[in-house]
Image 1 (tube, helix red, strand yellow):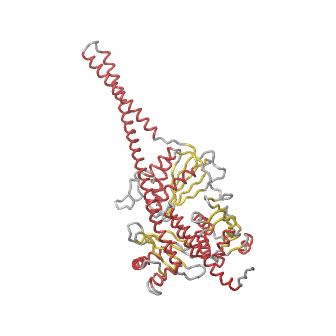
Image 2: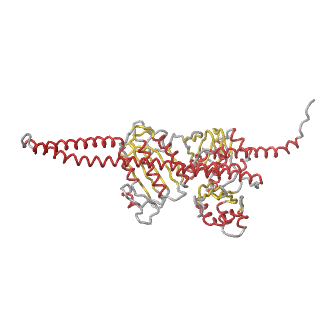
Image 3: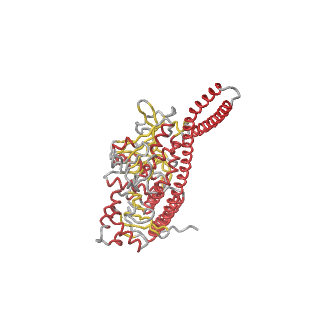
Length: 569
């Protein structure tokens, strides 16, 4: 018996329902993806990136901001992350409207639109929110305590939010609150462990100073003892054998010899102790060492709302160094950056190779965007007991010996430290180490020609310039771990004032956070009258684009050549 065909009209009626079901299923997968990403031990900024980009991709929000309340509560929430919104606009918005938002979240627990919070004409919130492009605000609670505020913009396709979307948003924020709290605790735990390690190292330094002190004293004792023993021997030859004076002299000489033996034993002990504290330099890969250091410090630094990133400008960089002393120097430089920059500041670790006067060096930079240092204070920064603010009312404490210690350790490894700064534009502290002969042949001041930026899951080819258009090709996964890397790379292209063709032919997976990253890129380029076109989407990317109707507001072309032709490159 043959089956009756389904009427064509019924099939067309079923398509929207099936598509809606598929979209709901995708939203559920996005929620699972977010929970898995936030469940992993991550630094605070990594968790915030995962949250914002996943939510933007899941709900197709065009913009998002996240403010966090500093530990201890009170005060204006600090801007922690922004995607698609200028930082100054987001900071002004919260500075002006924090009391109204926090008051309403104290009364109403769920997400609120701008109209419900302030009304269409009351207060500054509607105007500031409209300027920033944010229409919805949602609280983040941990143990019934407000720890953060999330701001969201319009949905790209203009579809009104359904009740299920609000429920999914609340569920996502509940997961995020646990991740934020765990991120802070995890970072503080690692930081306390690091402080204990440093305390142990300070005890070892005290031992070294003790040995050094004893060594100096013993050297001072040997000289008079040698004179005393020689004088006693001369007097013993003058006196007659068997006389009482000779017996006294012989006894005094034997006791002086005994004291000299004790001094020499102490000298041998202090010499061994000093040898134990000398640097044991060997040739190693700075990239691996600094990457491991960045992973160790990332949770602790970010828990205090200081963002720390790592930039590697060489795939392999070999130098001569002592790893323990290198970590101590980086601790001193990084702690100095954290101490003298406010919450919300960005600190970048950068590893590169450089050349000076024909000599090759490995260089590690610690760059911050803090208040900067006056030029007249730079020459004395690395002197012991120097403070930028020496007054009794200074905000940052300490003895001012960290940078001096860093200079001493660097010299012990044959290197040096230096600093450049500009008031209002941040500071850069650099460590120079002797380069090994195994360095690559590319000089440090050469551009990115031929380089490939990689993570474990995403490969970004070197940027190809086509006049006012840049072509960037991706290969691998575009998810919570790799999306921030893409945003960082594209920001460099945007800063050059170029248009962008993003080739997605090699992308094997695109999660909600990947969609969120694409939305951010398009939004930011459009604000500056720039053009973004997606070229050659892989089957994995194309299926997501069709499922979520992303082609309504994303320019997608079947080939890279077509994208270039559409832009006019």
